[in-house]
Image (cartoon, rainbow, N blue to C red; front, top):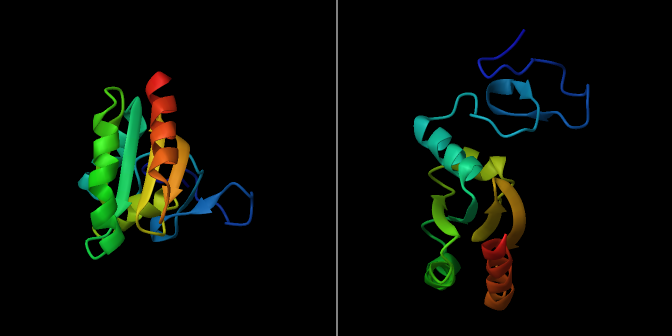
Length: 139
């Protein structure tokens, strides 16, 4: 039996790389349009998957650290032409956050061609973040 995404429904202990997603369906861990996800979530996943260089900022509306850190992150990203910025509210889109293993706020993922290059979570140095953006800008 197959889902609408083409993934097989198999027992969850068959293979260590198999993960459980929405509605109890088991699929491979590759990124694809999520089963049972909204159009907005699918649009966010598609943007993440297709961007050449992207910094994704996961946050919640009630996070005070996130409010202070976001303008600094956006300012660093604005200095680089090749890196785009995407803000995702983890409370509004929990499936997108979970699919990227984001369970703390703020979390910034620097992605190159849809693959995670660096992850910054909670309290992090802006110098380390700027260095990672410089590397992403050169690639």
